[in-house]
Image (cartoon, helix red, strand yellow):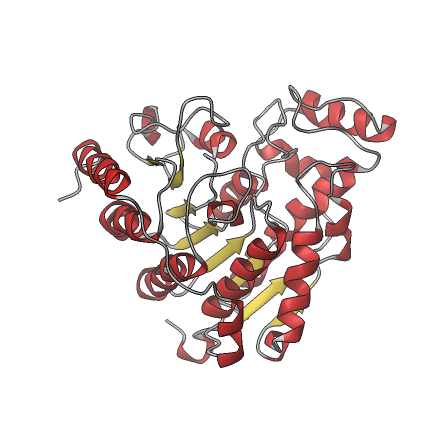
Length: 356
């Protein structure tokens, strides 16, 4: 561990992130990023963290996880500026190819800054598009920057861990890395009949050499801070600890927040903060501090921006009292029915993944 760099954090940013914003009444808007940037500036966090721009990357980088045919298809539809990239959630618009590529570049810049030794933590709120698969878009995601980041990280590290706390299952990331034996993949997500994307059950644990390295924690609607933290503390945390990652990737989707219009989880900012604090501490204890945070979903724009700002402050070790104004008024509590459901899920997961 390098004590002088204990919380040295870099924030990867490009104004081109604003271009990844779907038209009309589509819920995915880059106002999330602009609000986060505003909060970071208002609270003075850029006095403590450094801001850098992503380097341009070749489209060939996308071939780490996507097919050439799919990349070419996105380029054509980006030029045309119309049509659907999936079954109805992800419309094409003019320039969507370039807008997607720069967000991938942000993740790769985050990794490069950590590998340089100048920083131990990196943040790219433009990343986290975890629904894209090898040959298809999905859930507002065109290119899977998380899977690309993992493949790049594996060129240097033997053990790469992902913890995804987005409200939706990371189906694209899972499918692209399902047989990967150098990465641990953990997703905490809402799971309910007919809820997108429909995957992420307890028994999806990986295949081949990757068997046992995919951990799905499917949570019922109404899961609030208490039940969520129970699942994290009793499943996600010990699995991470056992894996001993050399670098941790943390996807912080804002849609697990109780105010999100698309997801029915009930996390407060305090619940998020507790998870992020523990992952941050674990990174310092096991991974020489190496931690990359990305964004993800989040459709209550102010709640998502507050979650991201507080997460960045925690990762950067900033304890500014004015940040408390961004917190929700209080923690959330699950009903006894939900608590019992989560307890049963936790016990099953302990059995499946041999957690003592």
